[in-house]
Amino acid sequence: MDPHLLRTFLAVADTGSFSAAAQTLRYTQSAVSQQIATLEADLGTPLLTRRPVALTPAGERLRRHAALILVRLEAARADVTRALAPGRLDLGLTPLAWAAPVATALATIRADSTPLRTHVRVAGRDRIVEAVATGEYDLGLLDGFTAPNDPLRLPEPGAGGPRSIGVAESPAVVAVPAGHPLRGRRRVDLTDLADAYWIDAPEIAPFTRLPVDGLRASLRYDGCDVTVLTGLIAAGHGLAVLPEPLVAAHDGLVGVPVARLVHRVELLSLRADDGPAARLSAMLSAAT
Image (cartoon, rainbow, N blue to C red; front, side):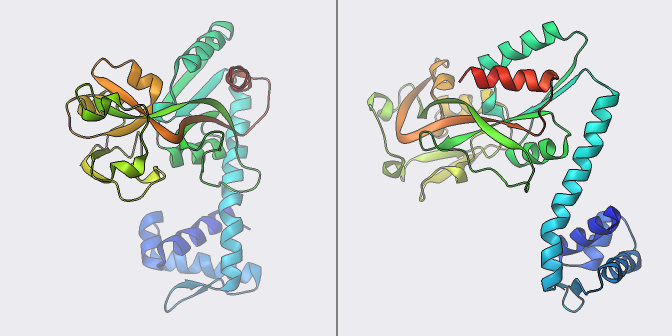
């Protein structure tokens, strides 16, 4: 099956429209229709109904395979490119995944692997999972809040995709201003804070991923600068759940421990080789 036809098929399946898929792919609508017809002829079965546009049972089956096929093709291309140009390390991380052990391990590898082109990128969780799965990033560091010793719930890139291992875990705390009434509490349950005002920072500490319902945000911050978020909390604009080491390092904040919740960092990788990515992975894994 031609990967170009699979991309067109997925575009129609995702948008639910031949015209919307054509706009996304910058094709004409007739070109999209022709490519879908070619794919259906190749497989010998209809994949989509036309009015309305919907997947047939065969189309549902192909959709599950097509996304994974395209991811693996991108990963193969990236792996070949990397072999032709060694000495590269691309690391993607979510804002709260950065920590001193990461900086130390990265410094060691760069000192031992001169010349090494290193690129550190801050991105969202879904973007990092996709980029590691396709080989665009060599490694990903993802963070989130979960029950002690539980893994993070990550998007599934499909069988044969990246694997994740835990590399760090620290207490989760509610970050409050130094003069806040909660500052003296030894421990707090998030369900007791339904009436508090919170800051929703989806790029740093996603409000919707906290394991509790009923909390309300009084302010939304769409950036990924942790300094801005902690400054907003210190100024009294709202509360947020953050890792305890980050809050302890901020003079204007106090951390109140959260019951049955930890901040966890996981390392996401696709390949096992003897290059800089494998060394960094081994060093971070050994630090746990």
